[in-house]
Length: 395
Image (cartoon, rainbow, N blue to C red; front, side):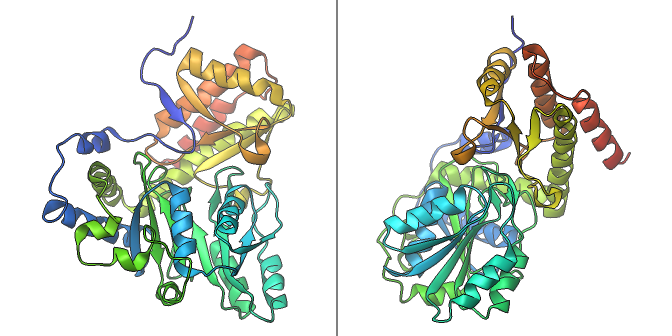
């Protein structure tokens, strides 16, 4: 017996659910890639990227996932042998650094924890010790999808400034852009990296970089530049050069619609929706944790992301049963723990095209699986989530 017949729901932290309106926007014939409508769409998407990153910087689009944008960011501002400092708070900044090491960069990791945000004081101390200015760039994520930590980007910028250091500040916003506040110019970020498949509600395949004036200056002397990723080549006047070849036509149609939806809802309303749905999720997890089987991976409430919640299990052996039950019996795909948390955690996404029925359904299905499988958990998680939303969403 199952109750899974119907539309399967994707509860993972990327790719996220693509709205029907976006799917429909892609369902049309291709058009001329050299002039006309597609040129206008590309220009509008670039303006939308400046809007959502709150930046006056230079946007670039890549036919690639987020790992491609990582490489694009590094190769355009750095040279072989340059030292970069990676700020660890989970898996993804470290992964970005590993990609840099393969390119020939000298990578140093400022050790951190999967349970806490990056410590600005530790960053400031390390930069003050770098009296020779060997560190050329600092890599960090705003939200780490593995740990679900939220890093304080303005505080990290202040640490760099307090140290009087000239390193470029590179921030990965793949798991945060379009779900919470981000202010590239105001926060002094030199390169912003993102991708379309999470908060931007689009099928994977396009990623982005926005470069500050300082980053564009460093680009002029970078010797890791390659033909495909090179920013200079993508600034040529011919439209196809923006993509180093044929544009991703139907992805652009979809992104155009995604940004139309974002503008219609408004950034502040989007951020508030994510905050509320994250709060409901945390209310449920807090109740489930009362029996000791479940716990928040991020210990400090103020460091928990509004896009994803990572939940630790004392007995990881029950995870496959939870995932299988949710999928096979109920039609819900729930996120698995990854990297150091493989086999130890589940990840509940609340990002992108998601509302209260979607989120409450996800949480209720999880609680249903705990009951059906006999997994110890505190009662009343769904009631707590409903009460949270009822208290915070006015009539």
